Each structure stands twice: as C-alpha cells, then as structure tokens.
Image 1 (tube, rainbow, N blue to C red):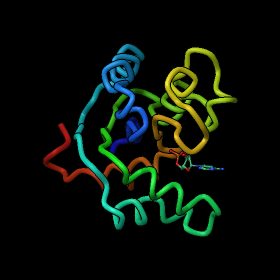
Image 2: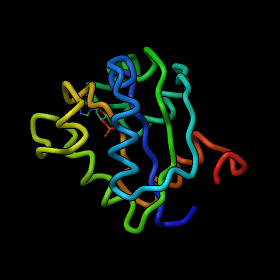
Image 3: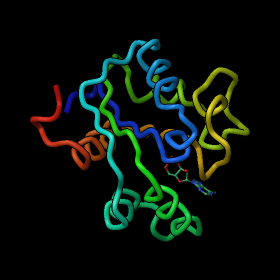
Length: 139
Ligand code: CMP
C-alpha cells in the first residue's frame, strides 16, 4: 500500500448517533479521497485480532465489546501525508483533550467511545487496511 494512505473506522457510537454523513463530509472536505469503504460489523474474533496490540491493557474487554456492538464504516483514505493529517483531523484519543473543530471534539463522547479510528503509522495503515479489504476492493 502507498505511504499516502491511512485507514479509518467510524465506530459504533458515531454510527448509532447518526453521524456517518457528517463525518464523511469532514473527511472529504479535508482533501481525503476514499479509495475503499464498507459498512460492516466486527465479530468478536475480528475485534480481538484487530486490537491484539492492546490485549494486555485493562480496557481491552471494554474496547472489544464496544467495537462489536453495532455496525461500523471502515475505509482507506488517500492524501499526501495521510496518516499525520488524518490524526490532526480527528483530534486526541480522549475527546476531552481534542482541539475545537476536530471530529472527536464534535462527535465523540469518551476516550472509549471516541467516534473514529485513525492509523498511527504508515506501517499500521497498511496492516489495518489489509485486515479489512482485499486488493480488489481498493480503487
Ligand atoms: P483507537 O486509537 O482508535 O484504538 C485504540 C482504542 O482503545 C482507542 O481508540 C480508544 O477507543 C481505546 N482506548 C484507549 N485508551 C482507553 C482507555 N483508557 N479506556 C478505554 N478505552 C481506551
């Protein structure tokens, strides 16, 4: 995968609260091109594998329960400097610390239910994108 790509999920809280359209609008208005996208629901096994790096953290059970409780939108986004620019667009993990105008400031309710995911490195963007999409689902 190109280093100008990142991976995102609109998480169950934001989907439940009806924010899919507004979040996609913010993403495309910021100059990201959607090169892959699907509306799906993670199984328990999917979520445990996707968040495997957090397995030993005290919030792991809560995280897996939350991420499997309803549908999500997953997508691969393309833009110059995609990983860093997308993390700036979504804001800090904890919405209480997120800057005004960021997606998490606008739509997230807590550190656990924080509306969106954004990859933290080019390497993880490639791993996470490949977890959700086959090559022929990326345009
Ligand atoms: P994200 O960065 O998308 O992926 C890891 C997730 O773990 C993170 O978003 C938060 O939703 C969640 N997380 C991180 N820290 C905590 C915490 N202290 N309590 C609950 N959930 C957390």
